[in-house]
Image (cartoon, rainbow, N blue to C red; front, side, top):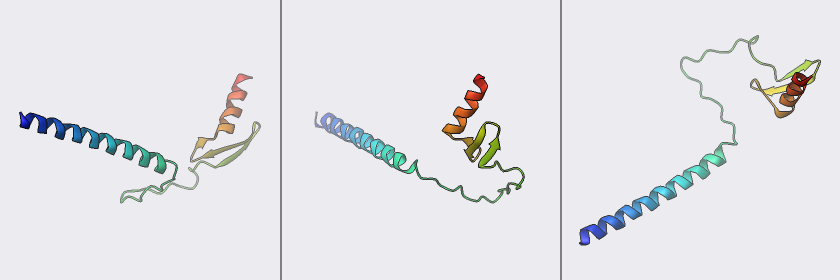
Length: 86
């Protein structure tokens, strides 16, 4: 009977430790997700030609459209959607 009780206590302890570890890793991930990390340079990395890169600002008839790494910000997205509604 003592073996069964020991097994139950050890199993419960492992479950608690696993839940604590999962909660801690989520907090760490949330803290680091806001920081921008530069991608490491790999052995087979090809440099992007200057003419292919997406500009951060683009002057159009809609106004100035801005983006970061080709992804439009909220204001630019709203301008484009408003233009589509016309």
